[in-house]
Length: 365
Picture 1 (cartoon, helix red, strand yellow):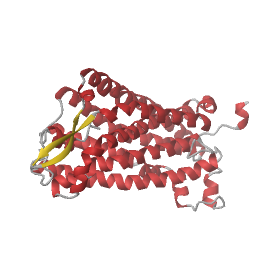
Picture 2 (picture 1 turned 90 degrees about the horizontal axis):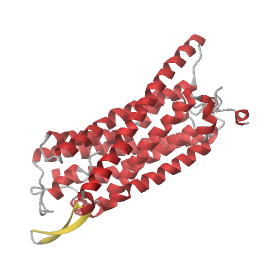
Picture 3 (picture 1 turned 90 degrees about the vertical axis):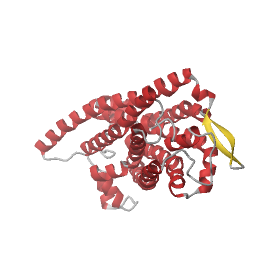
Picture 4 (picture 1 turned 30 degrees about the vertical axis):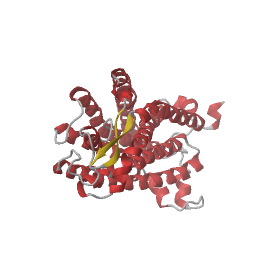
């Protein structure tokens, strides 16, 4: 996503004062306020709400499956659902509410509160986003090992290892984003005879070395370029394995739970790459051209990139429903082990978690 909410950038950094009683002096034209309202409030807000509910349902289904199969893949997908929930829960107040005031004058009290809470929401949002990126790479790597290097899966892809890996990701996501708490300073300005609180970029955020090393180089490596390159490599190999296994299964006339899970993750990765690549390009354009003004083409491009990033955190439930037969079975089955569909789903020959290869106990000896 952009380095901060772009519509709030127009409000707080392009004007010396803020008029909280009208939106005419907010530095955003009527066309831009309408565009922001449609993209951020309507579309992004809808994605946040529906996506949050979908991730909660996904977590519930995956938790039931993980409790039965003790699978690392189910655990990692649960962690991904939690990270996506954090992204959506923070994106909603960060991006979706203030455009409603700028466009229609609604939610004035929140608009006045926003500058005070934005720096903290922004940091928490980035923690969730970092977790989502890392977990997507981890679950894809987990699947790659299970499919392409199955003899190493017992050592690398065990449930115990998955729990440790998720703990490491949580620590990294928190530590990496601690500087985000210090990127903005609150400032009181006088507007129409009353004191108004706004925010501005801190001296840390404006420091050139910080901008080069943290905001650009480290961000590219950790959040964009590194994950996209890794996922592209993993996805190409998973697609090759999927085609090879599908051909064998068709020749034998059998279906495969392993193939089911591979297909799920291939689609998840493809959607992630499609949604995050515009952000990667947007970051480069911001570095070269600087921050856009209302009405610039980059202004609209950034907003669409923000929308796609939010969509990426909201769509996994739909992917699971469309691509995974086992997920659909568990979704419609009551949460009890004596249900026939649930029993059949969890007694597949591969003892798979939505297709994850489970190594027999004797393989550990």
